Length: 299
Image 1 (cartoon, one colour):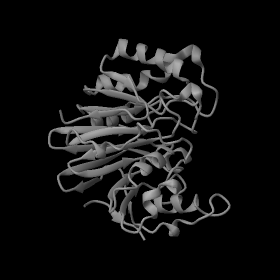
Image 2 (image 1 turned 180 degrees about the horizontal axis):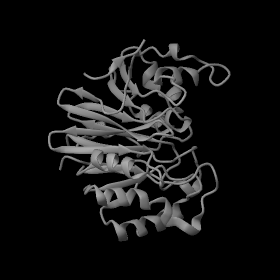
Image 3 (image 1 turned 90 degrees about the vertical axis):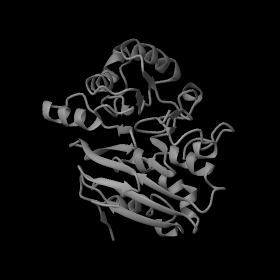
Image 4 (image 1 turned 120 degrees about the horizontal axis):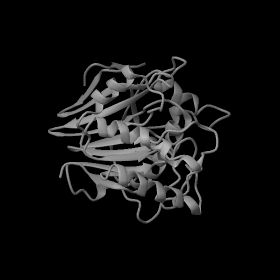
């Protein structure tokens, strides 16, 4: 590893929910475990796309990578409980609750034989990713402190424009949203690349936009967020407004495929079905993320 510094749930598991690592069909695969923004939204009207908050798993050249630890991380963890010992790498885009709230319920972290490398940037108040994860597990928020986790936890402080190298897999870090201090990640292996950029906002200035476009340019798969103004109710009369930012940067950066995620809590399955049709009419190689969606990259 290089260019970084070593620092001092809400849904049930269905029979279909199995980790892509249990049924590998390639060397670079992406699976979605949580696709909701802001807060978990379980219910009959969100069962198709899912109600868990952000969590994406990537299997790259034998490496287990996880991006964000929303409530989807709990579901992923349940599929890993019979796979000890485990080693995996968790990358957080920011320290807001919807990105970290699944971590206290990540069962493999409580098993001594496992090892997890945890990466993140400083929050807007200067707190490290380790401090943010520790704080949410303190009383009165949670009954058990992080120290109860028996697995080996190694924390790394990242800064934008740095790289993490895991053998022949490279993970590059970029600042995506200055206000939220949110970063994005580009995962590169051989000739394949995936960008995880989930804090795009509508009012990006020209300099910021150019930097983002350069970061995601030509990727095989871009995972990007829908944009809206939280936490107000979503205006369903202007459905196009919340996906056009992701489509615009995907088109400008010449990406091969686009997946739009972080759906608003008010967006039910019927509404998202309509959005899916609208998005594909503009960008045919785009789709909306849903839990259990598996996408091969190295094909």
